[in-house]
Image (cartoon, rainbow, N blue to C red; front, side):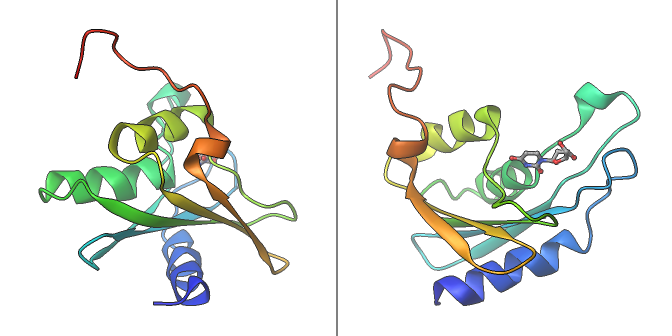
Length: 130
Ligand code: THU
C-alpha cells in the first residue's frame, strides 16, 4: 500500500468522527507489519477528558485483536495545518514501536512523514522493565 492510499483511508475514517465539541474531525489508519489495516476516528465526550483520539482508537483496535507490531500510521486532520499526534498518542505508539513511520496530513493537501523516535525522543520507559 502506498502512503497516499493509507492517507486516503485515514481521511475516510475521519468521516465517522464524533466531534460535536471541537468540530475537528481526525482520522487514522494504522498499517500493521502483517499487512492488516486498522482505522480510527476521534470520539469526543461531554466530559471532555473522556475524549479519545483517532490514533489511539486505531492502535487499541489492533491490540484488542492481538496485533502489536506496527509499520506505519497515517493521520488526517480536517484543518489547514498538518495534523500532528498529541503527546499521549505518541507515548502509546512508543509502547509498541520505536521505528513507527508517522504520516501527518492536512485537509488542504500534502503530508509530512516522521519517524516516531524523532517525534518522541527519550520516551518514558519503566526502569525495571525489560
Ligand atoms: N485529536 C486526535 O484525534 N488526535 C490527536 O493526536 C490530537 C487531537 C482529537 C481529539 C479531539 O476530539 C480533537 O482532536 C480536538 O482536540
